[in-house]
Length: 330
Image (cartoon, rainbow, N blue to C red; front, side, top):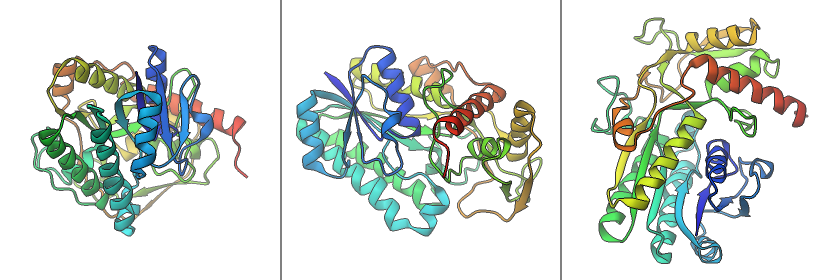
């Protein structure tokens, strides 16, 4: 039997594929390559180019490859873009997730892991924010993910489907072995953008908002290394293979860094003092978002291995250097 990874040619999905093949799992990737890269799917994983919204095609992939578990990453992830194009985000993140869930039900796939987000919390009243906090997303991106969580909950009640929804905080870094990393052009993730600025791939770095109610006025986020996140998914898959319990869990370290603190770390690790400019706030950005991460540690026994900010930054910088050498921009 095999694991289907939707969006496995993208940033987080490609790290999930690496984690699965490292422990000998059979892996099939389904990706339309709209933001992913064929070269990011490392063998022996098999790539099928297709869309998760095509129910008939997904059912065929499941039957042809003997899929018994789905890990769902495919979707759009840029918060400001979701504010500008809400219908596009509801289509890509909610409608197509519904199609993938239907395909799972039709073909008897009973294990489903969903890539959710801390954006479902909106602007939480208390930080660190726990899984039992009120869901009140302030962006279409967060709403689109919340709707998929609701669909999974209701589908699991009505059908033989068990799921784990993992609510990511700020994912960063790259595979420590240099096999994958964040490769999307025009990325908006802070550590990725700062790494590009440090290596001359951007002229400068812009900081959006310096008047938040935080110690230095910039947004505070909980940054989790992408390889630690992939290991969390492995543990979630192990859980679903032995337990009927559905789970919703935060994925973060339980501590935050401000935008300026991250910039200082990138400058320190890279040794480059790149230009930084400040500008106004972006829509949909809460001032602070930090995970209460006790549940995933207690229930799944998850222990992070790359939780130092300088390690996250170093891996991101190393990947950016590899991209410059192997996939230079025109």
